[in-house]
Image (cartoon, rainbow, N blue to C red; front, side, top):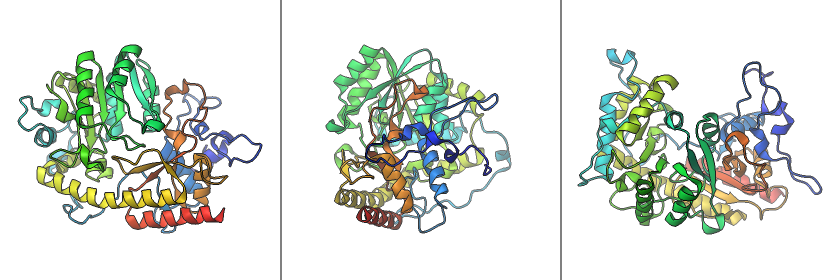
Length: 452
């Protein structure tokens, strides 16, 4: 992108300003709104929250290799070695046949490895078992979700607020289905009971529900008896659950765990080919290989066939060499060792961030049960950093990156009325980076507050 391209600084509506007495704050949500005329034959395509944040950081001098900067906004985990984890893959062998296209649903070896992983981890002794026909491989989580969205019919699809920022454009671009928001209450710790779920499904005529579980950004996890009730409802009411489980190994509430240190709705599916449950996961977060772009969808075989058909015209399938290299990473030994190591390391970083942010005066609606994020409310901090937008702007001056909460008010197609304050005071902080980066970032935020 050249210096003359249409960057955020070229559009005044994309610049949230500091809130001052007598001035209305320019909302961060304006950063993605489509404004003005299309660019030739093309519409203005909005940026996801993290892309906007990183673009703004670059304007302030951020460079990934600059040790003065601390990226507490990143959506990826540290990808280097961890104490007790398996050795990292640093090279792969490419067979002669790997120069060819991979099948759109993925190579059979990886599809079977994923099925075996879910059967071994979550479905031991259950009569209904996943096979490779229940698995579709894609080049990253967004590709998997896009295939699913493209395959949906003319239905009502429920989605929760707050949730993953990339859902906004995903749910807005496909016009067959109607996206219906379901607001979660921060004063109840973002809990949502099975009874409330049933009322939403029946009252709004929902045929599908999309959610991240654990939730990005709040860290809320639906698991155990609660997830069993959700799956039972989905089966009884014929409402498909689209479950983004990319953080399912980052679990901090030990009471949610049974025999393995991760959670999945796969434990609660009765019949793998009948229960309307689609699970999305991949190497990105839980195996800490975000650059590989290897993801999968697990579910009933007739739905997997629909996703493969969508993939044939959307993306054409993923990388054959990386799919082959992923097969051994799905072994029980490797997956369990990696998960136990990341839980030790990331739990320490989580507790550090919670302790320091609380000491600074950031209110935590709910300590995260999962993910590597802390969802903080900054309204009690001194002006001008008592909103997510102004906190973000001021933090950039101190070389710290975070994500304003308004990005998680998922509003597909900008169909709902402008934000009236929802998540305006929230910020998402990531403890994905190395612990040293987190320490320095928190020090710099503390210095920022002291300077006020």
